[in-house]
Length: 126
Image 1: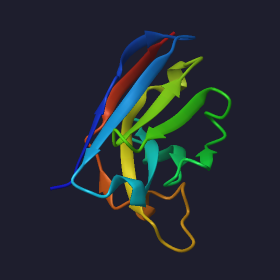
Image 2: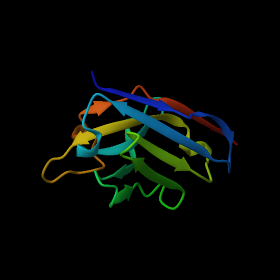
Image 3: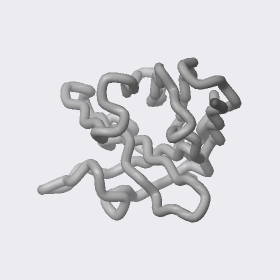
């Protein structure tokens, strides 16, 4: 049974930081690219960051570039998202996704991901 479990969300003031973690089980972790998406109430799921299987390439949405950092630990089957300089616009449920290797992978498309976690709430107050 595949499970992706996010943690680390919470409430923080604007300008603060949070570190999200996603622990993955039930699949060959090193064969999957991973990503963080976010979804605010009434909005579509939005790409935030992605990382390739070996961690050699990372991708970021323009909205988070320079503030968020994605990383992975293949030995621990975890992927993390360090979020700095948070703003109220970052308020959302953050979900991690796992994408099995495939040709022409588009990291920013939610449809590319095979498995999802339930998400963790991040709330940034002004």
